[in-house]
Image 1 (cartoon, rainbow, N blue to C red):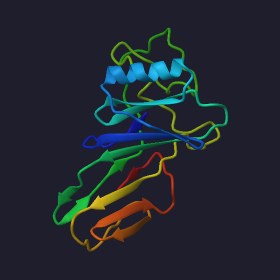
Image 2: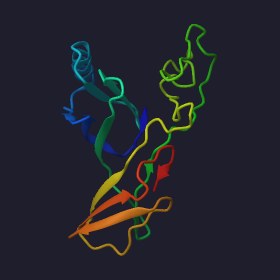
Image 3: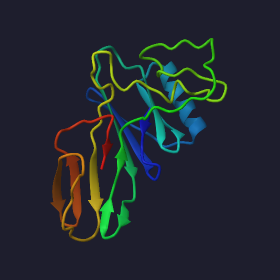
Image 4: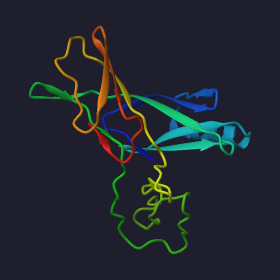
Length: 191
């Protein structure tokens, strides 16, 4: 489960497993699930990114071997907000705990590492999917995230700054490449 801005549009996804690169094909939701399930049942490495809520996406991978490292890159378009002479871009990187009304379904067993911390209820049948763990038992972040942005504003900007993170900015004509100095983050808002 990963949060993305509600106003963003995902247009590409790439999964890297070792030296192998798998590029996604954007498909209708039902067809994408069929394609993913077919690849998984055939033993092929596969990934599926689905929109779960307006600002939540669900990422699945299949047939990744023990010890294999994977990297999933999601590309999206998002319009920067403009207010009083300044543009801003906020990117949520945390899932906040959500209220789950009603009593948990008694037959559901929470399995650490497989589901989140909440059990499904009659009112929220997918509560276990909306509450994933963000840290392993040893305190390590489960899904570190790297963010980079290409900003094309068509003019020179006076300043590009981040309120919460140190950033690096490289200018190429009227386009700016922006990234985090400290590398991967999770569980924070990048602004």
